[in-house]
Amino acid sequence: MIDKNVVRKLVETWLEDKEYFLVDVEISPDDKIVVEIDHADGVWIDDCVALSKYIEDHLSRDEEDYELEVGSAGLGQPFKVLQQYLNFVGKPVEVLAADGKKYQGILKHVDGNDFVVTVNEKVTVEGKKRPQKMDVDHTFQMDNVKYTKYLISFK
Image 1: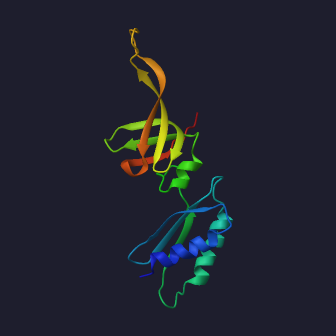
Image 2: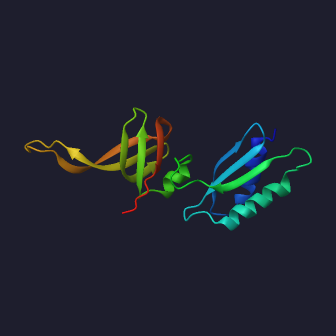
Image 3: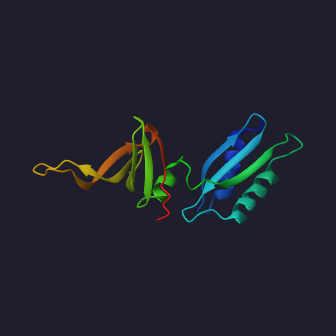
């Protein structure tokens, strides 16, 4: 089986001096290699092809046959790395908290493992008969949510 660390190092070498970042490397038992990269402005197909060729030039099919797929982290897919959170500050996201509750709002701030999402929700205000819509900040830990993903809107 192809070593995941070898593939990861190849990708990281190719990414040096580029604004791309590595999201994930997966290798299945039958040696299907899936590499996900991302960029703040999106991923170009030409760069995926160039990375794929770079990996193929440094792995030997004579030693071990493999299937290689290089692509971008899907726009509607859950975030996997810190850089994805940073790229989406100020944009709408959906968070599925550990308790199963969904929050939809604007990713306001990221600090280490913590991030803040501002949600416009109904809040009971003292002296008012009806709940009022207000922006409420919710703080989460990246490693303590089921997922966070960009909230695609077609409005």
